[in-house]
Image (cartoon, rainbow, N blue to C red; front, side, top):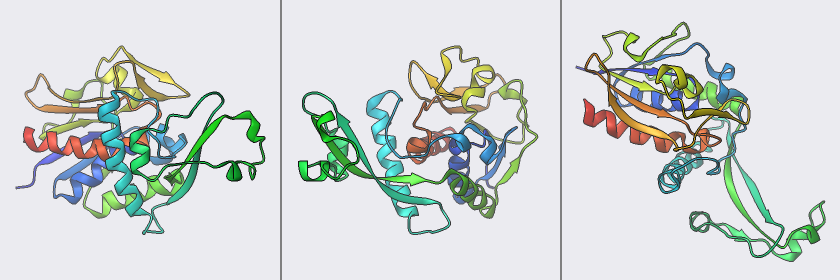
Length: 247
């Protein structure tokens, strides 16, 4: 018998996790007051790049796992994913190219390339470029929602909970992807807003299981800062692993 999973939140984290669980045969329902373009994810810039999230070791691992999935999605014209050249500059000294960027083909830009820029190359002492996935949020979030529902998942836009235990007891497991809403729902007082409504935590992304008072397990997955899209598939994969162990 398929186990039932409730996901709170319909931003990129909630939808990505929903796709993963539904396509693996779980009966999955997403509950949220706001869906798709109405969420914080719908208003966010969606360029893949590990940014503004901790802890670094886990963030890079999650980001690279997401990179692989996003690059594969480019093959589907309906996904809204494409590749774009990202350039990073340094005003003084040598630029530090991260090890993970080298593994994805990052290269130091030559002076010849610099002279083609509309800005003066003399403003910068060093730079590097890397090709990264770019998500059109209008298309991508709809793509995830459609893929989730085609896999048998349901989206409920009337779901507001005062506490995690309010989720219907027919669901065996709860996944908390409430973003900034987790501040009240999970009583997370280090969760703050940064750059609009991006949910940022000083202690980093919260991805861990916790026991509810009714005996069920909730897996928290929020606090991604400015890297929600960048970490989405990697975090969803780890949530799936934790869910398998919990069930």
